[in-house]
Image: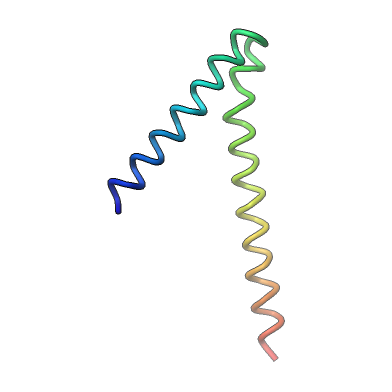
Length: 63
């Protein structure tokens, strides 16, 4: 399972890097930084959304 996760992580990283390079040729530095920033902000948003759902469920089931 660790090997599978590692391969998926590397593949995902290569896809983001490919989009970064392609966009950097079209938009310069902003294009280079945009894909990793979008991935990071999306990860943070999903993580905080799931944490809020878990907290809401714990509060709802407490009584």
